[in-house]
Image (tube, rainbow, N blue to C red; front, side, top):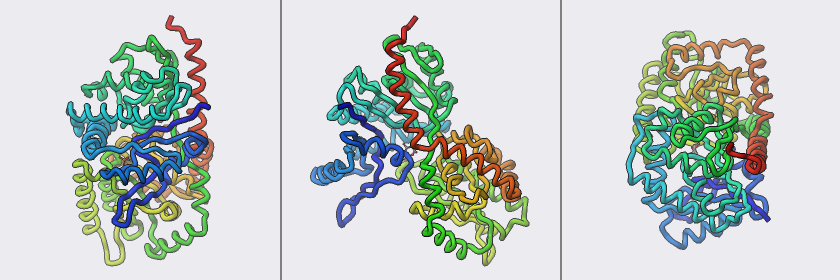
Length: 472
Ligand code: G6P
């Protein structure tokens, strides 16, 4: 019977090697939840990197055996592959370029070769399990070459690809020396999905400019096979967040937080440590807000959670220092004995605590310079059980296309961001409820389960479409 194989760089779990042995922690991420209904069924599988370097063969065997129980298969990366493929080409070339930080991107032949080699390694791993009638769904920018590599081996397979980060405009994408290979790599798929219509349009434009392929309503004519390119804005597990927000444990946590923080209004922000998230700009805006509206001093605190990420990459290390310094400066300038303007945490929190922070927050501040989607904005909305609270959202996040009822800002406009904070804290309750309920209705309907279903249905549809597709 045909099966479905999910492939992503990282498996949906956290594996750690400690003195006491190897530990496994399942991921609570949205993608893992959404795809749970797929990879946990029958012979279906999720193939990916367990996220750490394991040198010893016996450790690898142990991890392989344990993962198999969860329908997962590991792809082990060597220390050099982690450096050159993961930290290097994925996160020092593609990540900055695709987020419009082209000045950060490094272009090195050796990193490209490692990227190609690891994409081949993933292909070899998939080929141990895949058969020609199977469906293979590849995820994200670390594996852009994989669809074509798989197509060469399995001409008839159903191959889907989804990109979780932005796809840049051609003027940015063309900076990449290996740009044609990337487009060819992706066009090995039958269906290529992006979060937004703009990402999709950028990809189609690059396919046209670099390879001369035209398209009709997103159906790209490659001469051999038609490939459908479409937008699938990713949702969250709405019910999970809504239920967690009214769970007695979360309510208790919120009460504890409230007691510790006092009567102040609360602005919350939660991100991975990343320059694409616009954290310094947000801090500058908050500082300007305190200066411009002094009546809010001692009355409002910014609870800022930064989750450690990619801290072996130089740019991330430097960003961490910049944030530490900014927070230190703002707090030391404005704080009083009983009030700290910014409560800064550099660590991750369990989901119930995140939910309690969302409950506590009057305002959620989401200010990326560029973001594929941004799920924090959606999680905040789903957690607002009484519909009170305001979302300030960067127009550079994919989510801004859907969340028109948020207060939208340009993250480069510090001046306007400071005023937006004031506006959000002053918004009458009736308006908060009207905005929040409109956004809740939307993200409840287009949740993660719906997203998986629509993508899978579309993949079946392309196969039918391909049969009737003629190039004339
Ligand atoms: C983004 C990417 C994912 C990635 C995640 C965490 O959401 O789209 O592909 O897994 O960041 O980054 P990491 O480098 O830790 O996997």
